Structure formats: structure tokens, C-alpha cells
Length: 405
Ligand SMILES: Nc1ncnc2c1ncn2[C@@H]1O[C@H](COP(=O)(O)OP(=O)(O)O)[C@@H](O)[C@H]1O
Ligand SMILES: O=C(OP(=O)(O)O)[C@H](O)COP(=O)(O)O
Image (cartoon, rainbow, N blue to C red; front, side, top):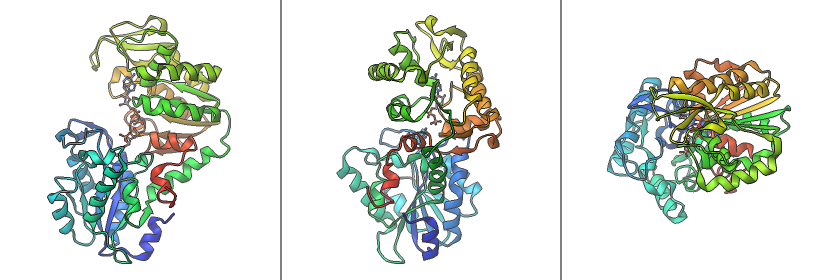
């Protein structure tokens, strides 16, 4: 795999470099509530700009449906990048259209362009390879796909998206000389430690809201771990599989049978909540009640694990040798539903385990709840990406850099 250092050694002055970054930060309206992913992307973009490259950054924000939507504009991200980088950053109004072309054309050496949200074009995430390929060709053409030592190149630095077989992550890497960025390399190096022979017990904590993505990972992860603690939006599909009513909590109906099978196969390995904090609506000032899981209210939703559960999970974590945590235990962004995440995160900090936290929102929770970042061995920018890496899977965005897509 060729790396950013190889590219810098070749020389990038005056060359156009397309960088795929993961700048998918949490927003409250137009305000970035945690800029961790932007900061994590600075070294690669900064080194390229400093070396005189004309840097074209591409990234996504949220999950728009393949058309421009103002609330998913990268404008707040461009503004933050401008503040943090020692280089001028210009945001194009579109992805590969007239604005993108003129912005890229207008770049001087050492300047940075940010293309609008790459997911404003439906071809980015298409399952149809030909469609994705056509889009990737437009992206490559934008930076001018000329071969040779002065030609355009691609740097893959969005670790949080390397598990996605998408045009700007995967297909474009086949069209331009492709290099692994510093962030991707650093993340992979740390996570390798967890795929080798992790210190036991190896405890994985799973929560968050990307339920179907993550349920799919559990099957291959289970044989590798000693305990799986489930919380967040993840737990209700398991509870439904146990025959419990979960009210209007997050539920992945199509995965109930999978959860039944996982529970039957895993025995004691999977731990589920004993109690849940429910709310009458999804709001910080909702009416709340903490109930045992057998007593969940029909028209209410579970927005946090309860205190009995949090203490049980904390006790498991206290003795762990290795911990991987992805996904908040509740809707920590609203104070009444932050306790479960706080208790679990604090237990990880207090343990002597080698601990990795992964995911945009999980990392943001660590900072928002005031936990010491140094209390974790590593804070990864990727949740789904690190989970799939730990499964032992070949991630498309990395395999393509290694030349065996
Ligand atoms: N019980 C729940 N119901 C709905 N959403 C939840 C629940 N628990 C946690 N969440 C939400 O999950 C989101 C994070 O999920 P996810 O994207 O999977 O995590 P990460 O970004 O760390 O990988 C948070 O914004 C949080 O509000
Ligand atoms: O936020 C992300 O992943 P994560 O929530 O698993 O950490 C990445 O930006 C990938 O986003 P996606 O899951 O919409 O492809």
C-alpha cells in the first residue's frame, strides 16, 4: 500500500490531490457540536497544502437522499476547516458541476477546495457498479486524471468510511494513483492490536442508532469476544426477539429473527438491559420514567439504559482486559438520557483495560460528557469501520489501496 509519505517524497507541488476525508460531524442546526473528525483530518490536508499541492477534499455529511439538501451542506465544515487550517479553503456549491470545476481550476499551489456533500449525488452510494464508476470518472476528471509524476492522485484519509463501497472511497481509487492517508494508516495500526491476541476478558459495548448496520456485524464478532454489552438503540430489537414489548423505541423488525438466533447461539455472552429510561416523546423536556424491561410502556420510547443496567455493565468493564466501545448507550445529546453513556464510559476510563472507542458520536460523547480523552487507549474516528475491521473483514476502501479490490 502506497502511503502519504511516499507521495510527499515523490513531490506534490503544483499537483492536484483528491483527498477523501470523513468530515461527518454532529451538528445542532448549523453549529458543529464536535469538530473531532475535522481535527483528525487536518494533518493530512495540512501536509499536502504545505507541500504545495492543490488539494481537493471530498466528504459527506449525514445521509441525504442523493439530492442537494441545505441542512446537509458542508458550509459549516468549510468554515471550521478555514479556521483550523493554515491554508485558504473554498467550498464549491456542487459536487462535480460547474462550481466544482471552476473552484478546482482556480486553486493555487497550497490552496484547498472542498466539494459539496458527495452524497448530494445519488451515484456516490449506488449499488450499481456502472453508475458508481461513471461518477468516479467525473471525480477523477475534475482533478485531471493525467498519469506520471506531475499527474493528479488520490489520498484516502476518511477512515470512518473505508467500510463503504462507495464511489469516492472505492471506485475512484482504481482510476487515480491511490495512497493511504495518515489517519487511515494510524487507525489501522491501532486496531490491528485488537485483531491479534487481545488481553482477556475482551468486552465489546455496542449501542447507537445504526441498528441494522451493526447487528450484521455481531455474528462474526461474537466468537472473538467474551462479552457483548448491548445498549442504545441497538437493544430493543434483541428485546423484541425475547418477546418483550418495546413501545415506540427504535426497532429493526426485519432483524428480530437474526437477534433470536444470535441470542440462542451466544448463551451468556450477550448482555441486555434489565431496565430502561423511557420518554413520552423524543425531546429533552419529555416526561420520563425508568422501568424494568418487562414493564416498558406501549406508547413511550426507550432513550437510555437504566441505572441497574449501567451498573451491571460497569461491573463487567471493571475486570476487562480489552474493551471496544461503539455507540452511545442513550440519546446523550439530551441531558436526561446521558447517564447510561456516562456511567459506562467512566467505567472504561476507570478500568485497566486496553480500550478503544470508535464512532463519530461515541467520540463526541466522550468529549461532551467531560470524560478525559486520555482515559482511553485510542479514540477512533470510525464506528462502523472499526467494527467491521475487528470482524476481520477486508474493508473495500483499504483493499482497493492494497491493490486487491
Ligand atoms: N435508545 C436510543 N434511541 C434512539 N437513538 C439513540 C438511542 N441511544 C442512542 N441513540 C443515538 O445514537 C446516535 C449514535 O449512533 P451511531 O451513529 O450508531 O454511533 P457512532 O457515531 O458512535 O458510531 C446518537 O446520536 C444517539 O442519540
Ligand atoms: O459517521 C460515520 O460512521 P459511524 O457512525 O459508524 O462512526 C461515518 O461518517 C460513515 O457514515 P455512514 O454510516 O452514513 O456511511
